[in-house]
Image (cartoon, rainbow, N blue to C red; front, side, top):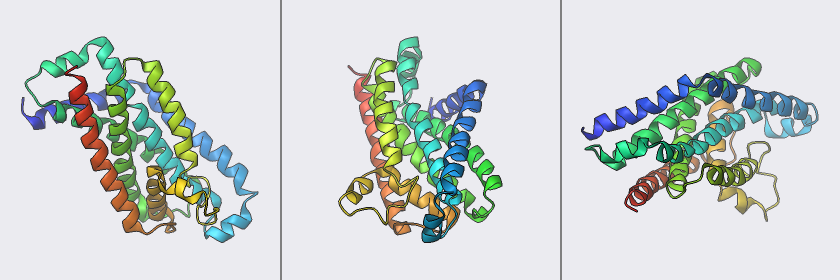
Amino acid sequence: MNERNIVYAMLYRQLRRYFRARSRVLGTIINPLMFFLFLGMGFSASMRGMSAAIGVDYLAFLAPGIAVMTAFSSSFIGGISVIWDKEFGFLKEVLVAPASRTYAILGRALGDSITSVIQSFLIIILMYAIVPSLKIEGLLFALGSCFITSLMFNSLGIAIASKMRSPEGFQLIANILIFPLIFLSGAFYPINNLPAVVKPIFYINPLTYSVDLTRYFMTGISSLPIYVSLSVLLLLTTIFTFLSARVFNRSTLD
């Protein structure tokens, strides 16, 4: 089996697993949508002053954050499937296959990233229907930003899961990391007017650059130069993808 075939095989497997789990598909649409509606509409009425300051309605400001949150949380949690594959023996079949383990894990990461982007796409379409002021011409670029984010964090999730044996332990780590990263990303409020002492916390958060880039494509506003956000995302995605392959290869030799 050559490298291209193993990438396609693993990618196809992850996509098929996703679409066969209908409850998962439904859940990944309903939860972010309810978050967007309840949080957005609740805050929108009380944040009209902020809406005037940032240049867009608060719902439009929030929409890119919800799209990135969907891609991020689903892709990072996707790393847990590595642990399940260890438990049920599928991983052994991959390891004895006459193909590179690096390409196998790359195919897996790409498959999970595509499913995460599909989830983001469904949420974005619904949000475009609710908030017509969003820029339709930025849709494909926003999805591209979500894909880079998904690949980055899915690779990180795979790297962490490769060194673990307990799904519960991975879930605990995910819960500890997900919410701080989301709330410290500027997804829910602009970071320009934050006190200078806390801004460095936002700038060391990779999700900040994902949110800002996606927000630029969907609304035309941003807090950071676009080339900075894109460069940081591409660099970190490359690093995390390499890291996941390296850690996975080492863990299978233990």
